[in-house]
Length: 613
Image 1: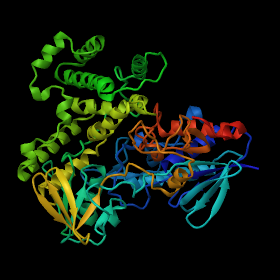
Image 2 (image 1 turned 45 degrees about the vertical axis):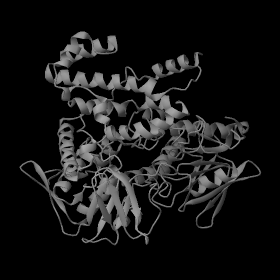
Image 3 (image 1 turned 90 degrees about the vertical axis):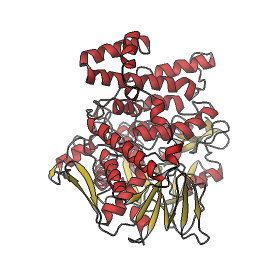
Image 4 (image 1 turned 60 degrees about the horizontal axis):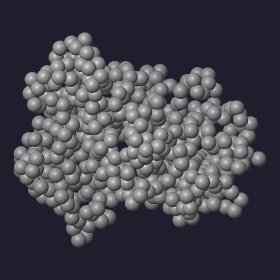
């Protein structure tokens, strides 16, 4: 009899697991029957192939793959391309800023629909080339519930009324669109989630007014759908981008609590495998601090992010900032000498401190200047806030054009992306004290996203043009509250600089929890899983072991229940990323670890029973 495993959710995370299971499976002889529950296009998740082409990925195409390293899997003799290799081999083209067609390049941001087609192809490719002994049953439906059965197995109930009995289950579900709601607004008829964007805008015409809560990636998708998606277009005249409206755009009121948009992703100058290697925020340094805190070598003392990690991050960013600045102002040799001196002393030497003090204050490194809120006098005046915001975005676009190697500020901000493995080492599995974990999630995560996880510079340039054309209204300033009308058909957005009434409110942000998902609820209700907590702090997600097994209500690791990705965003840090080729930490490597534990459980029945977590 085959060992039966249900994979619930076949988006990018489920696809990573499928790739790794088929990669590490050949040496095993036990037949494996995979039951995949996925109502959409298998492999794609939210990246559906039929979405509008104006919705772009947020990562250059050469830094996206769904296949594991070739040296770990030689079972498929050909193929296994990255997204860039896949589109290049198919002769795909893009339309550049001059409205000319050209072949796709490594550093292009492609439509998400193209990514969806790649992921769908990858699913078919993996299924087609799976090794002997693995069979796959695709259930084109959602899984509603998972219930334990008496003989160490589970029943999976599908949304169409189906029921499948399996030996094990892996959760690979995505964001739950109902999981989070703005605290100041109750659900109402006029409120919409951002995705799919066509639904968010349905029923609105040029006389309508829509409020977009958020100034990040999701908000920009909604804005693009309401402008380019309604027939508007951007034209460049004498180097300046200008928006030509179609007349069908609804009025757009864009706002956020902070009033500060994400910074643009810089023009990519880094080769696929080129990442900044940390010198201060290293895994070794983090583990040494743990030992110092606990007083026992190898013990897992909890850290304080502000006290222990942030100073190291600041040193990392400061060194990159000034190295880049010295290279631009003096020479590459001087930049190397600066870096050597900085690494030797852990800070600016006297020689280089004198150099820094000779710079204008605006040219000196200051993490605080990047994270400070809108000044109260600016926030209180709508016209002044608008001018401040436009100037900030223009400056940001100018730096982004220079690139993530040549712009000092963009090179420094890019460090935040490259040190994620170290941050995971510090944060994962309650690595911070509860108070520090809560403060990090509340205060620093939004800042880190703003600095390092922004949209392509094209989107910030377009937002600037839309504000200048008065298509997008930012006159509320940072928003304090949102009030729904008694019938729920309109909203008043109250900001520090003014109030706007809108006909619809779009929550342009991703949920941070998946606990309202039916499968997750059923596991929590039966005690097969428990919510992750760090002391009194509840960051969200399900509690898991380092082998990705769910931890049950009594603290034991569950029998053959695993979870990857969004369901464990809480015990794990920053799970919502796509895999990059040859990354040192990635969803593919996590999936491989999970796959190996699954195969260990199949081979050793003793590992199929609960044990101490």
